[in-house]
Length: 351
Image (cartoon, rainbow, N blue to C red; front, side, top):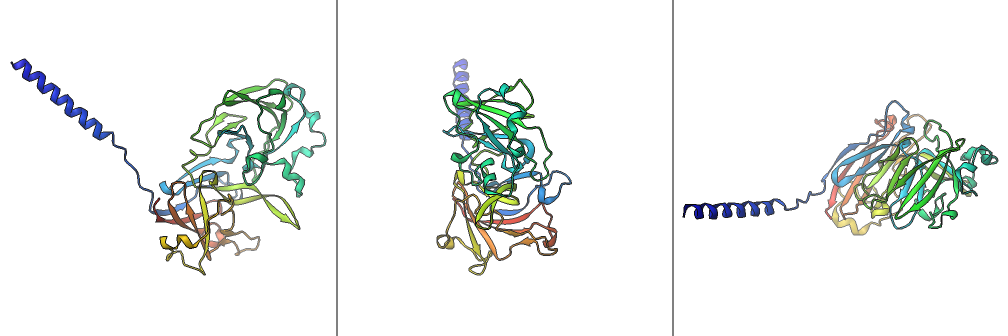
C-alpha cells in the first residue's frame, strides 16, 4: 500500500513539473525601444573622420549598433533566389570582365588599357562599380550562370577609397554549386588559385568573403538593422552628366527589407510636436538614399559644417514601428566629432 502511495505521488510530481516546463516555454516578446541617443562608432583608430574606417549598422528597435571595418570584405554573395555577387562600394572597389574562363590564363597583360581600373570623373567610370542604388540587376559581375562556361574571369581592384591601404589586384571566377556558389580567386600574377564554397543563409542578405580571411561576418541579420552609416561610393552631377563620387557620412536605409523614410521640415512641424496622428500626412520613400547626406552640410569653409537643424526624419522599420529621428552633431564645427555622429530618436507608433 505504501509503495502504491509513493508511486502515485511520484506521478503527480512529474505531471506538475511537466506543466511548469510548458509554462516556462512561453515566448517573451521584447517591446521595441522607446528611443534614446546614440553616438555612432565610425572610427577604428586615429583615421580622419571623413574617411572613417567602419560602416555602422543601426537598429532602432533594439537601440544597438554593429560596426564592420570597410576593408574587412571584398565580395558579397546574394542569398536570395538570384545568383548575384557584389563589389565593396565602401572601398571604391572596381572590376572588369575578361573574356576568358581559366584563371591561369589571366595575368598582368590583361590589364593593358584598363587604366588600373581607376575611377575617373566621368560617366564611363560608373560601369566599373556596382549600381549605387543597390539594383542587383546592374552589378559589374554578371548573374552567375548554371552553365559553367558562361561564367567569365573578372579582374578586381579592391579599392583605396577613404584611405584604405592599396592591395594587389585579384582575378576571380564564380560558379554555382548546388544552391550556393564556388569562388575561385588568386592574385593577378599567380598561376594557381584558391577556392571557397559559399552557402546561402536566408537570415542574411549577403554572405561575405575576404580575399585575405575567407568567409567573414559584416552586416547583421537582414531584419536586424534599419540603416548603415559610413563612407561609400555614390554619384554626383558634373554639368548634365552623373559621375561616381565617394561620399563620407552617407546613410543607406535597409529598403531591401521594408525600411522607409520621410523627411520632415521643422517649418511644418517641430520634432517635439510630431505625433502619430501626423503619420498619414507625410510621404515615405524606400529609396536607399532617402537619408544619404541630406541631414548634414560638409563645407571646406571653416565653421560652416554641421547637421541641418531645419529637418528631422520619420523612419518606418520592417516591423511597422515608426520613429522620429534627428541628428545632433557630426563635426567639430557643430560641437561634434567627424566619424562619430550623434543622433536622437523616439518611438512615435508601435508596430
